Length: 132
Image 1 (cartoon, one colour):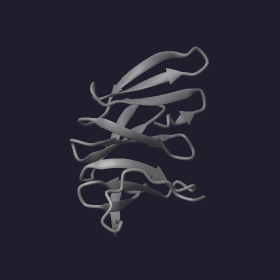
Image 2 (spheres, one colour):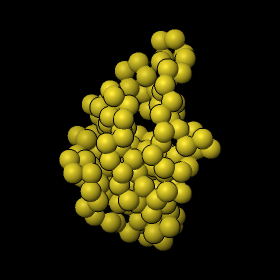
Image 3 (cartoon, helix red, strand yellow):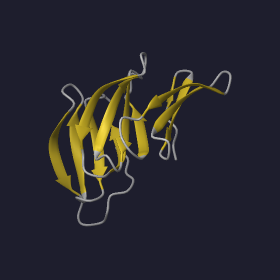
Image 4 (cartoon, helix red, strand yellow):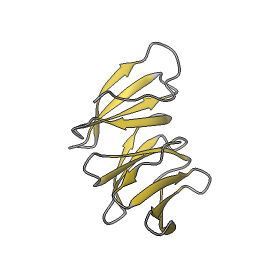
């Protein structure tokens, strides 16, 4: 698992407890635990400016968006069985792999709404990355 790093913090998804641990990298201590916004938080990613955290909740069929400064949920986006997500380098779109639908779902980060569904060819899209 890749742990996204924002400045001096790391965010870790805790699937069994449905929480996200916020770790201070200077002290190597957990400084906060926030609800993941769904069940089975299995993946997460941070936008390029470090202000937003996206959490895929596998069993809740959603991607939850958090403000990293306030550590509060600001949106919940429906995506069927989200497995992985990645953010474009300009932060404009989040792509989320949907295991059940064999697709990538493109989410507009300005509106937090899905704007496109892209078939992946029939192999369950577990992990992916976007080129810069």
